[in-house]
Image (cartoon, rainbow over all chains, first blue to last red; front, side):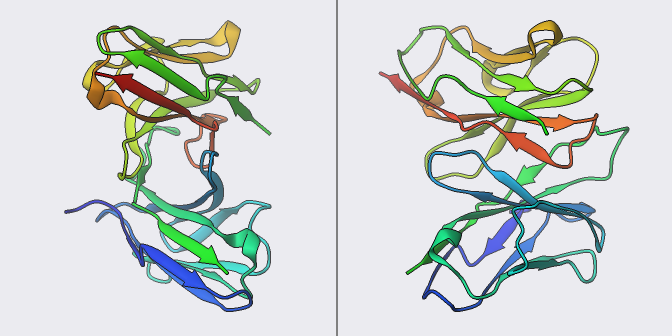
Length: 117
Length: 114
């Protein structure tokens, strides 16, 4: 399967612990995005990478959240000192190089479901 | 900041019925528009997209959507639904001609009865 992959698929952690999620985009996709989705809502944008550069960050991304894409391939999202409100599905998406201004679609992975107890 | 409204939270139809799901956005500039679908147990998949040109766009599985700029709408349609169309449907907007930071609606759960 050559789609976006995410690991782990499920993570249960205790409040206060740190967690890290990994996203492997589709090969040759230079754009990578992280979203968060809670029950009954659509995905909410967190951050965007073009190659290794983090170009956009949402106000939702508090200082407890950090994302990296060190070599422009896979990305990690770390949440420090988790809180119960962090419980959500964390989605990763990737896009191919643009064919024109804004003309690229995002391909989503299966997500990592985080439960903070 | 842009926002997206999907007024129908849950739609129930019988097979062969026609479908129209509403999507309205609030943003005055150039937009890129998308419909995504999430089948039970699966990840989000792109149904169709609008970037420019013909406002009537066709997607996979017989779906189409019409961009009406004056109404800030991008409604999804299908003339005859099937049981396999049971899924959650999300409308999304990328502002300023960008598809980077997508804003999603809250989704519409479609249940098709056999």
